[in-house]
Length: 338
Image (cartoon, rainbow, N blue to C red):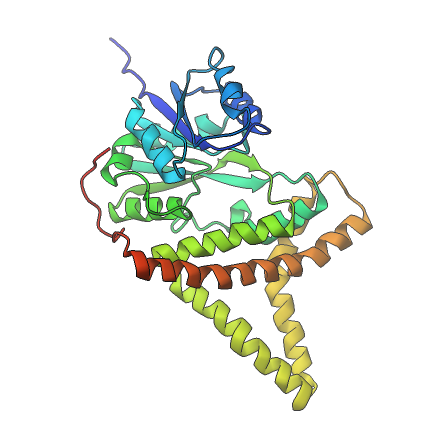
């Protein structure tokens, strides 16, 4: 009696100027308890030694490097999806370190249950500084906070049946940010069954400074505007900063000091979740002590405000682009062209 052949697993990623971090990713791939059958990485036109470093790994890994100068993330991933031969598609990103059993854990629900189409892994902060610890606590949920029924996986850590990726025609090439959210939502439109796998862990470093963080969240929000995502969330943010906060400040200054108490309560609610996460994140920080903790606590409201301002600026820019360019309706899932 012959044993049924295991489905072939293909892993893809896109990179651009990742010379400082690409070895970290590839080394963690080589250390996997279950190495993928093929790895396809698309380089978007790196000007550093990223490609040279990747090519040097070709003897240790089943790695194919595709150079596609000028392509965005979606175009790069779609180029890789065109080339894969595996039944199961695994997607990760540059700048991460994969736990040794990441791939084995990630594909397990798909291998064990024919009804599962998508397996969502988890990603956590890997801070090297106190600032990065505060950033991780502010912007990243912990695994127990995730609602498995509604979680939309980042393409840092996701596996799915290749046929599904092709059925939704891959990633939206007209969108430069938030492309993985649209990819997930289109899979949801197919009624694909998602499984959340918190044990499939990817570690990555949060942004290390406010300028880089501001740019990141500006671009995320611009992507939201381009794709018409999360109208309610953005509306609440504008109402909070432009209506509720000025009104409370006026009342506190002009009507009664009791409104300062309401502002204080609102501020504590605003930072409560990051404060709850901070002990978990700080355990991974190389710096400890009272001063490190105090610095992290002070940083949390600053990071939140900077992120919210970036979103409020980026979102209308995305909407203006949307009105001018009339992008495709991503709600319409058509046959694959990949």
